[in-house]
Length: 275
Image (cartoon, rainbow, N blue to C red; front, side, top):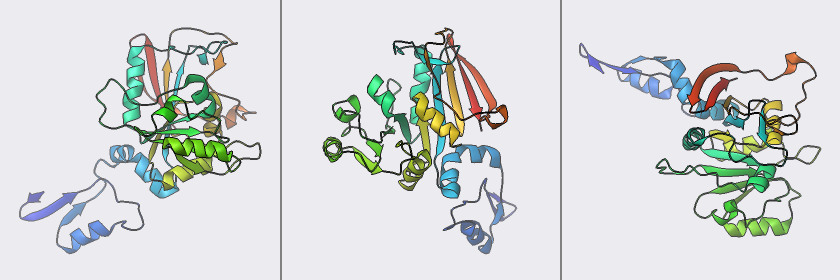
């Protein structure tokens, strides 16, 4: 901007990356340019939340997506889950995938659903990285993810005990293998896994399940946003819950989120929550 003969630059944020933080503003001011900072800073922080969290905390911004019945179930007692929500909700999920660097699922969900995890039917110009947390590489390379790993990227996070044969089979599909730390019970350490993904450049991750992975991320305080799609049906106590066990002996220890938006998607409801 130029007003009254004075050049002015308006900025929302100062880059927190220590390699460059504040230097650009200093260079402009040294050149006689007036710099106004923190204009629309809050929405700018929201738009850049993934980059900011990666730089300041070494972690990606995580959105947990849940698609459940009214009573919080993600499948029937027999495992049927397609489709709890309707076409408008599913289209919204595909749009969410495009706004994230990667889509993450656990090994159980990948085996049960054999998902594709791509953004479809909305004119996508690119695809997110498809991530699977699978400590023993139990998912078959003949799955949809394995069959399409050369078309769209697939990254598998696994533990040090993953069999050599499984590693070789997955490497042959073109998938990227990322060894990460495990917890005492043998499952992957979610914090270590997300730090590894941040080091590889991922800033925003959409977690699409299942219940055990969702619970582990919540328990480790790694979830920043929750997008819950709720359908108007009930599946009962014998249905599969949306979340696995959480160590919550007291209500004061439960992960809490604040409601930021409610939206109707045909017969379904989308509620957005932020930590």
